[in-house]
Image 1 (cartoon, rainbow, N blue to C red):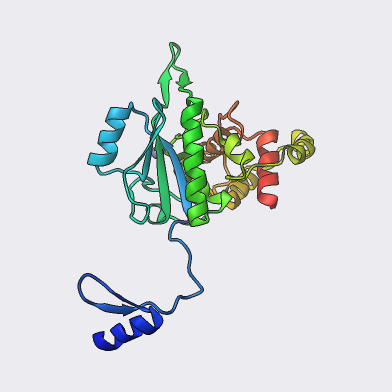
Image 2: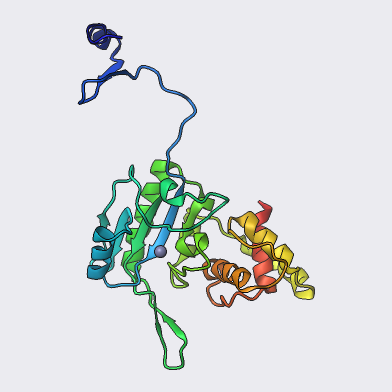
Length: 261
Ligand SMILES: [Zn+2]
């Protein structure tokens, strides 16, 4: 359609748009098959104070769409949601590996952990007001892009071999109670647990179930470091009281319930 016709059509149909470059594009028709490019939401902690977090996320080669400070709880938008942020790194979830291109990343200001006197890890709490802000942000993003609850994940879910954020103090259960993430039904877990207490499933079973849940996990058939890292990531999210990566009956029951759906 030439510009004159388009101008006429514009009056009649309101169906043309002209870009700043002068290219005339007719946007009368909308395809049914379309959705947001954003399919995943990834939650992180920064492992640093606010100032250094902001500097890293705005001036280095890593970035995130949002940075949530604790005091006062403030949400900073660093990358437009329509553009790619570099927050996921080498990662995988449900077979998808191009996660930077398909996700929105939220970085929460939290120092992660410090070493205790005997080398143990002491994790930093998230102030409730900061979590309230994160939850409101998560709700808004999920609604806008129609992100499925099984695709709202932590960095440790998508990169369990090298990441532990947002860590065991992040209250995933609060997100579950709001329907924002999937969570194993406690009654069903209690029903299945005694079976697995009698006999723990094989390592192959764990590897298969973890993969069905979404993790990239080796099918080695042996309890190697890589498999234990994945089990630990799962436990950190769903049972943060104990996340040593060792297979146990409760972990098996939770995995079974989650993957049965
Ligand atoms: Zn991270």
